Amino acid sequence: MKKLLRYMKGYGKECVLGPLLKLAEATLELLVPYVIMKVVNVGIEQGDQAYIIRHTLLLVLMGFAGLVFSVSAQYFCAKAAVGFSSRIREVLFSHVQSLSYREIDSLGRSTLMTRLTSDVNQVQTGINLALRLFLRSPFIVFGAMILAFTIDVDAAVVFVVTIPVLSAVIFAIMLISIPLSKKVQSRLDAILSKTRENLSGVRMLRALCKEKSESEEFDQKNRELSRSQKFVGRITSLMNPLTFVIINVAIVILMQQGAVKVEHGVLTQGAVLALYNYMSQILVELVKLANLIINITKAVACGKRVESVLETSSSLSVSEEKELGDVASAVEFKNVVFRYGRGGAPALSDISFFARPGETIGLIGGTGSGKSTLVNLLCRFYDPESGVIYIDGQNVKSYDPEVLNHKIGIVPQKATLFRGTIASNLRFGKQDATEEDMMSALRDAQALSILEQKEDGLNAVVEQGGRNFSGGQRQRLTIARALIRKPSILIFDDSSSALDYATDLALRRALSALPYRPTIFLISQRAATLRHADRILVLDEGVLVGCGTHDDLYKTCDVYHEICQSQSKKA
Image (cartoon, rainbow, N blue to C red; front, side):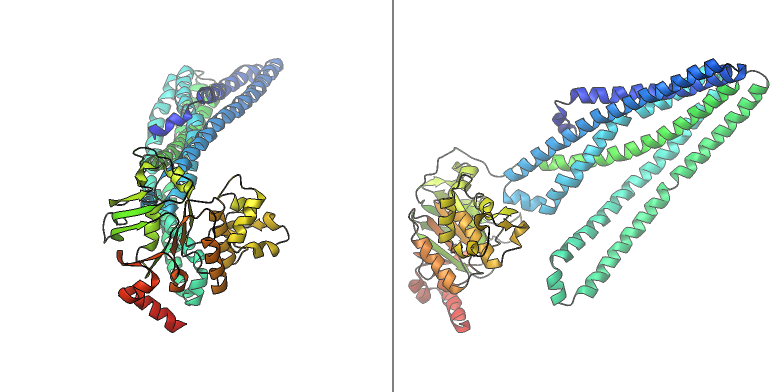
């Protein structure tokens, strides 16, 4: 948490003014019982109306000043807390963007979302409360006790005994409830995870008639959460009764002692009233302080989780920056080995091949054979465990990742569009793209027909995830987004699976006629799609079992022959 505090830089004035203004408000609050004591002892007892009016106006003035101090303090504290959390979000988001897929896979996408939202919000709340109450509550508690000594020493002894007893009860309940609250949070996380899983897979669950079993499992998790919440609630609900019993016992003792002393003329009625008010203030502030510590404890825990993400460094490093040319690039894999995580079998084993500039390289193999992993290594989303990947004769690690990604156009398996318009989505590929550039890319991607179906053309609205487009339309728009940047290396990761054979054929012809002749990597489950590639790489369980043209592989590679045979039988 300490490392995060450096992002408070620039909010020093707010961090000082906020607590100081709160102390000013607390000072006025402590003076109120003293003024009331004077009104009772002098104004009411002597029947001095002018005195009562003057001190009543003084109380109104103090109340107004306290309001100004409170609102101003709240403004400064909120400004510091919101600015602090805003900086953390920006830094955290930028840091996550710099991480490789390996770190993102290790941390988990849902975890990163929680860190960026819930955890940062909790840190913001903790900072806000700490600035407002961390000095104010102890100041009032000890200030009330000191002022009680100025009124009557014997009565103040009740304060000296009551404050530790109250503190012990409040903080004992707090210490018990904090770990239990963490368990509640973990069960709530399980509920949220189950809900997310069911909502995202609702169609499949209905198709498999699993609604009843999933509902029963959800009910079980919900009951566990409910039991935990009730148990914590029973413990925390003891706070108010116990504290009020203790404070009321103390008040009874104060009243009894005060009545005796008032009767003997040792203490005034106003003094007894002031002592009563100070005792009530102590109760309120101790409860506030307990809630403050609970919130700060949560904020510190959340801050540590945010810190752990920021301390996670990217495994991608640049040895010496090289510039990547605008022409088609040669690609070479040399004895590349890669595995996901630290255990398990390699996803790729001893992969070696060479792709000449402008060639079209096809990749085919069964599910899980390592096709997508190979192109992810080429894009440097991951670094290989061993072996070297070369682009234009230079180790891929010598290129700046941002420059490398700008020169590689990739169409992933899952076509992803962003909320906005068709034009704004295409500009993700090239920010300064002109309308002519967009139309050319759409034409090559066989996506001009999509514009003809939309009244607004390039300004047609794209909803989140492109849900207002069909699967084939999303794929073609994603292909256009990759083509618009005219990359040196172009990767299609099974990105024509939703296209019919005629559109797929037209797309392949358009790619072969591209004037800038990129080096193309074409992943497909269809042997027919790769038939005219310059070379085809055949992968089987992470091993390169064949490399050559369609005709050569059909004769010499058993895996490729089997794939072709199975697809011809289906046809």
